[in-house]
Length: 55
Image (tube, rainbow, N blue to C red; front, side, top):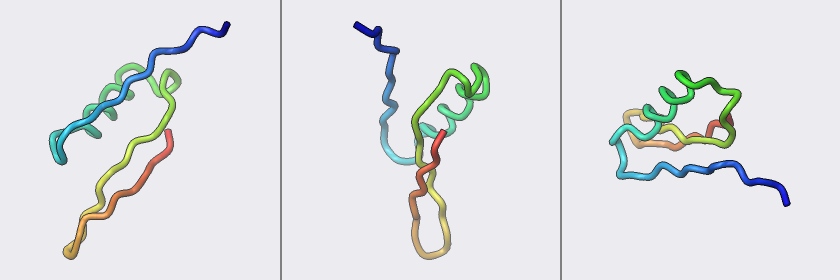
């Protein structure tokens, strides 16, 4: 049986720094150890839009 790699899910209220934390962790450890996606909010004068970014 194949050993499963650790998996983490970061959740929290909007605008508390989840995306910023993930980006800093990836920068410190290295992107070769990560897989998945995160979403980032793109703000304009009318509304907030979510964009999904693949890692």
